Image (cartoon, rainbow, N blue to C red; front, side):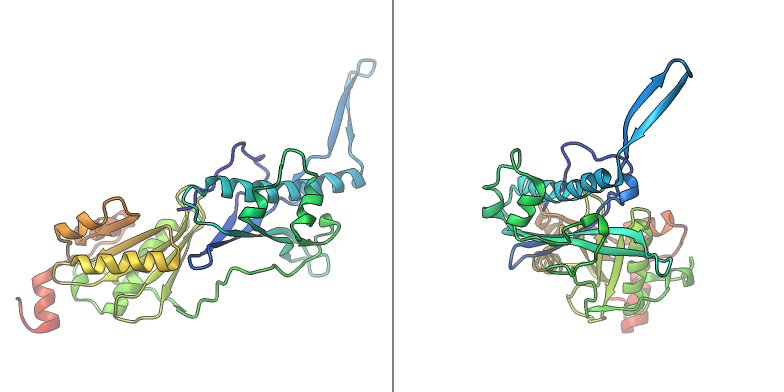
Length: 328
């Protein structure tokens, strides 16, 4: 797990937004970071009190001075973020970091908000750790790392990132609404298996919505594959979370939990969640000890639904009879 932290908090006017994508095979982390806008930087230089007039006179930086400070701030945020990520990499999970810095602004030609990448840099761990950040000039250090960006970052000239976070994952499909169609008479254990997967997607989408999380449902496979992927932007608990949904009527064996753990490792995810309409055996709970896995059984699933204002039921015997024509 990669922990992102800050030794000293940035000003409240600075956005605290970023996306992460980690490739387990290459050990490369891509960071899409939201920089503050130029307007978020204070230009106040000094304040003088004129006793004869009993008033305060403010003196501001010139536009040229403000632009120079703004550019320096963006370079410093870039270097600091890369430094903190490498410092937090106690598991030696990173070989390189690709940092893409974005700024939101208004396009004067259209009047619409745009989010432009203004700088991009790849920093290999072995090279970056040799830099003495306390003595470097930020822009010169960025150029030494062969970073890409306009010579005047404040111009907000868009540049193509070295590597983009790929959001157009072909596994993802359009979701559809299920949760509002269920009621107290709906037996979750007997519902269509694809509807159940979309129901779980909706459940987590609502749970992560307030934090700005993104939930994607994958193509229905009816096998041990991933059913949903959550991108959680929270700086401490966040990252990528993989979810598997099992509409089962019998005990979920440890093999399903092992499959989830394998999927988590393959995706380079921070956490895995397995949701079922039935229950887990003791071997499943034994397996997850010390691992970033969470098991949600039928009773907990009903509780989570109720917390979000929805009611349903789970009757495993009835579901077996409905689905398989028997109660065994």
